[in-house]
Amino acid sequence: MSGAVQHSEIIDRPPPPVRRWTRERVVGNALLAIWILFGLGLALFLLRAWDPELMAKYAPLYMSGVGVTLSLVGISVVIGAALSIPIAYARMSSNRVLNAISYAYVYFFRGTPLLAQAFLIYYGFGSFRPQLEAIGLWSFFREAWYCAVLAFSLNTAAYQAEILRGAIESVPRGQWDGAASLGLSKLQTMRKIVLPQALIVALRPYGNEIILMIKGSAIVAIITVYDLMGETRRAYSRTFDFQTYLWAALIYLSIVEALRNAIEWIERRITQHLKR
Amino acid sequence: MRFALRIALAASAIALAVGSSQAQEKTLKIGTEGAYPPFNNLTSDGKLEGFDIDIAQALCDEMKVKCEFVTQDWDGIIPALQAGKFDAIVASMSITPERLKQVDFSNKYYNTPPAIAAPKDTDIKGVTKEDLAGKTIGVQGSTTHFNYSEQTYTDSTVKPYPSAQEYQLDLANGRLDAVNDDVVVLQQWLDTPEGACCKLVGTITPVESIHGPGAGIAVRKGDDELREKLNAAIAAIRANGKYQEINDKYFKFDVYGS
Figure 1 (cartoon, rainbow over the protein chains, first blue to last red):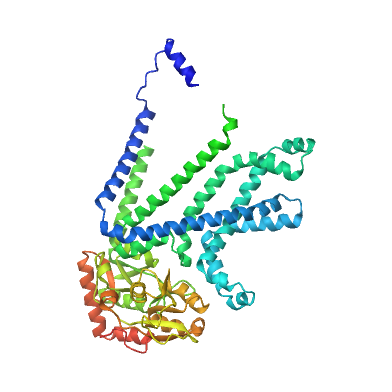
Figure 2 (cartoon, rainbow over the protein chains, first blue to last red):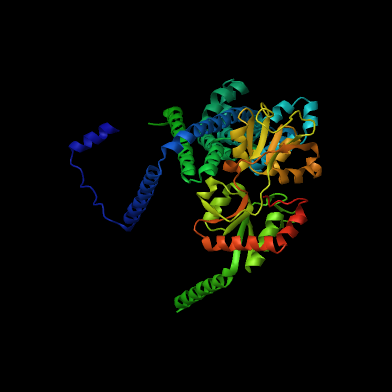
């Protein structure tokens, strides 16, 4: 490709089209300038509001909050991924009962707010202490952290199951037939033919789901798990300084940006064979 | 022609809106939390009631203004005042140096001590740091009680909750060993069937630098006119017996304090 460009430089090129100041171009540049001004304003504000004392006091708390957010989302996404496989299988199954159960599960967890789910699991189960103690589950439900991981895992499992199902179903039926004609078993077909193709389709939605979880986890302070948002609110309630929220926004933004780049990198890797 | 008509209509609508807002200028908007019985809480049919609400109403009657109540989550209540969502906070807010940097306060309108509550079968004997060492204590976050607990009970785990209702649930179900809040708030809850699990361990001597001189009415910084009016009204209802009447409606003792 680059060779072709160099080659054409030697030959006469048609004169480059005149770039005129069309209305779209003016509007576009103006909007860009406004955004740059916003960015500069933000940077200037943070620079002027820079307070070493505040930093020394709250930076470690923010870092612990980031740790809580990342580990909570990380663990939940992995458990959710494991849970999503049987759920997606049941969703695609022709067995009526399995299908109904998995449909109801996905319907409930996608249809209700994560906040309500976390609240119900923590405070709701908390009011059944004698029953939970009888079956030995109280030590699990006693801890806010476990309740948060449970709520988040169940929630993301529902979304991930739908992503997985959609991706697998997007692989044409003919692939199964072709594999069958080569004498591959169902499991081999799934593992070696369908899943590699499905993963390409599923990658972007998976990335979105993780990003949504990172931001969704901001509600977890309601059940006393102090994540990045919880620490931010604590810092704000002490200082009444809006820059506490700005810093939180910037940290969330950089986490999401890092994730986005990672996903793009993975996508480049797994679609190499599709590019010329 | 049609365009001109529209402009005229829009202009008259704006004029009307401006006119009506001027007519309502006498309405004072009061922010409160609505989750802190017996001081301010929402009844099951969504009405506000409590000591704060009755006091605010009495003050408005005294100042001869119409009052309108706005409920707002505790964490966002000071920013909402600063953003002009309401003009005063009557929500049992303690007057503290930290808050005084953000808002101005009227004189106190009550002052009750904080206390510790625990399950009835607790082994906690008192309210000192040693008595609570190793225990898990629940407190409403962003409050003077939370600051006190964090600074005092350094050998305990202090868990912040969004409102009193959540720590009450967790004390009842045994996730918490103790809770720290205003004695009146705790007593009110302990007297309900939900609070039957637990008892009062004891009251804490307030620390002026943390707990402040008591609960005041917060107004925006520099809103001296309103602050002075509120102070005058507080003094007036103290003098004419209205305060006592409201006090006796809710409490068996004097909450104004010394």
